[in-house]
Length: 263
Ligand code: 5RP
Figure (cartoon, rainbow, N blue to C red):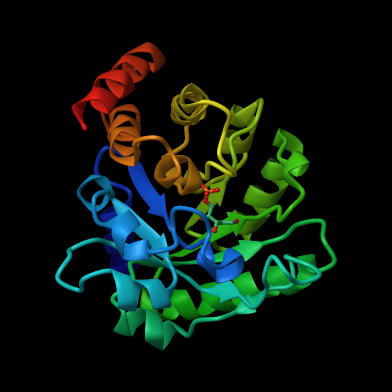
C-alpha cells in the first residue's frame, strides 16, 4: 500500500484495527435532520470520543474548528435530495484538490447496486478512486440503499461490498445484517457499519455494533443512533468500549446505564 494511503487510513482505523467514526454527513440529502440542525452543537461534545468525522465540506468549514486534530472523511457524492425522485441519482461533488486543501484523511462516495443508477454510481466510484490513488487519499465506498431499507441482507450487502472492493475502495461502509460474517469474509478490505435510522432501543444499537465487531468489522461509522440517542456522549463512549476495549454486550449495556446517570 502506498505510504500516503496507508498513513491516512491509519489515522482513521487505529493500531488495534478498530475505529469509532461519527457520521454527520446526512444534511447533504436530508437537510436539517432532527438533532443535526446545528451541526457545531451536535459535534462538539462528541469530538473527544470520535476517531474520525464523516461529513461534507460545508459542515467541516463552518462547524468544525480547524485547530482540532481530527481525521476527516469528506463526502464526495451527492446531487440528490429526499424531496427528489430518486436517491440513487448521485454524482461526484468534490474534487481531489479540494479534499487535499481540507486535509482529508479519506473521501466517501455512495454506490447504489441494483438501481437504475448502479452503473453511474460505480463509474463515479472508479473515477474517484483513480483520482484518490493519484493523491494518496483512500476512498470509502458506502453501500447505500436509499429508502429501500429492506434490501439490507447478506446477499445484497456481500454483492455491494465486494464490487466496491474490486473497484478499488480502500474501505467500505455497509449495514449490519443476519449472517454478517459472510459479508465480512467475502470483502477483502476493512468494513465499518452505519446504524441506519434510529433503532427501537439503545440495546439494539449496542447489539449490532457488538455483533459487527465480533464478526470481523473494523468498527462503526454511525450517525443517527449516536446523536439522536437519549445521551449521545454515553452512547459513543460505550461504542468505544465495544470497538476498542472488546467489551462484551452485557458489559456494554451496564456501562451505558452507568454513563447515562453521569450527566
Ligand atoms: C447514507 C449515509 C449517511 O449519510 C450516514 O453516514 C449514515 O449514518 P447512519 O445511518 O448511522 O445515520 O451514508 O448512506
